[in-house]
Amino acid sequence: MKIENLQRIEAMIVQAILGGPALVQYRAGDISAAVLRPWAIKIRQMAESYTGERGGKNNPRPEVSAEAYCLYYLIPNVERLSAVLSHIPTTFFERELHVLDYGCGPGTAALTLIEGQRGYPLTIVGVDSSSRMLQLAQKIVPSLAPGSAQVTWQGASSLAAAGAKKFDLIILANVINEVPTSELHSLLSSIADRLAEGGVIVLLEPAMFEATRSLMTARDALLRKFARLSPIYPCTHRQDCPMLRLSTQDWCHNCIDWERPKLLRQLDELTGFTKHRLKYSAVVLGLGAALKDGLRVVTIPDRNKHSWWATVCGEGVYGDAVLEKRKVSVDNSCFKKVELHDHIQIENMEEGRKIGSSSVVRVIPQYSCK
Image (cartoon, rainbow, N blue to C red; front, side):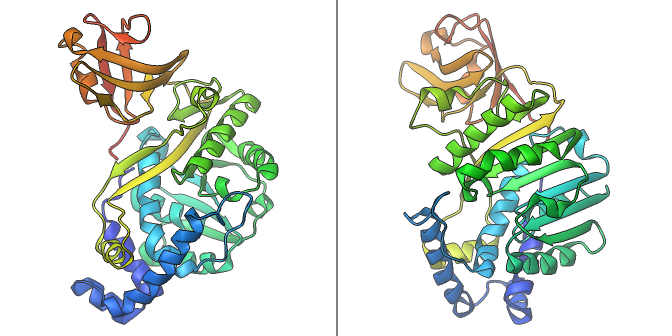
């Protein structure tokens, strides 16, 4: 699912938070630094709370400014979510969808789906415990696309607020890292019970070590409990995560390059941050979904003067696949250019995950563009 016009969403954010005069500046060029500087200070403080010792699943962070969060994090989160949704078959979105966004914040999923799925009916239930986040969502989402979706906002932390119906798509973005460990598996089980036949669960987290390891653990627990759930992304198997089992230092995440919209570029200049690349961790599971063939590249590929290698993961396979320079052929040479989280097939792989001169390597395209 590709979002073609992030700047259109960004303009709605400017109008909702900074007001009409700032929107006039935004449309003409850059917003005055005098207007943005106080927000940059709040954003720096918020970022420190996310990455500092105070943050973490079992150490609640101090209250953050919903407006500052929205100004700096909403657009990157839309871009991350659209990248993850691109791993779901495009046909899934070519129909009416009933969506639950649990922990919806300022309307990240609603904005992504409304902007990315034009022409098909959407019914979205957004649940969040922050009244200020919901107020922002109610201002931004309708102004983006009036009447294009039926959206209901529920101020609660309980799943009961979503009602008893089942959903085609359930999204939890930046939620797992905020839920105490003692409550997480119960919450996810309840979420999975709300999934309609053929439905999809999307779990999206920051690409931080602790958050991602929690996500990987949650993935294993869900697949053990629900036999008809299968991975859509990134995994190509239902086995317990081998990275989680074999390493205490690694975490499965991805990274995308993108062109920052202009407000974010300005805020980066004022904060000293940079969001020219976006990292994220995600798990996508489908009820009744078919497993994919092949392997996922789960570490950044590397090379030396003798060979190329990357850690690959699949059914019964985990570890470095290696292509030696002397064994490069027309059929396997594309392995030299694989990227993080590429979906690949390797035919005739030799013992020890060696790619031989007779091996055939293919990169499998995903369903739609990132």
